Each structure stands twice: as structure tokens, then as C-alpha cells.
Image 1 (cartoon, rainbow, N blue to C red):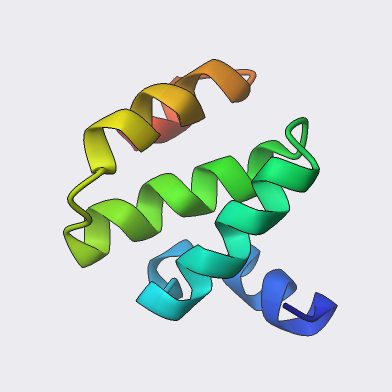
Image 2: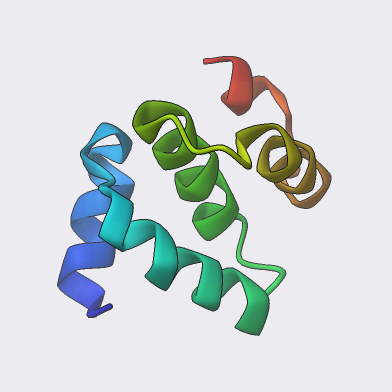
Length: 72
């Protein structure tokens, strides 16, 4: 994933697509402290109806400084 695409996703998290989830998961495994990737995975998984959404939501909640953004 290139920097421009990641910036666009951070500006509009609802634009995350299924193919973006693969790149975001790889990024979150490589950089586990990057909370933005975890948030985008949670938003994209919810939007796309991912089967593993519940597990990913718990993992994202553990990596985010504030869980309030997950409720928003």
C-alpha cells in the first residue's frame, strides 16, 4: 500500500475495501504500534461483513489508545 492511498483511507475510513484489509493486516503485523492500521481494519471489517470481525475488534481495541473511536 502506498502512502497516498493510506492517507486517503485515514481521511475517509469508510472507503476501506476488502483488498485493503489484506494490506492493512500485513502492516499491523509488521508495525503493531500503528493504531491507525488497527482502526482501519476494524472499520473495514465491519463494513465488509468480515467473518473474523469480532476477533479483530478485540485485537484492535487492545492496540488503540482510546476505545471511544471504535464506538464512533
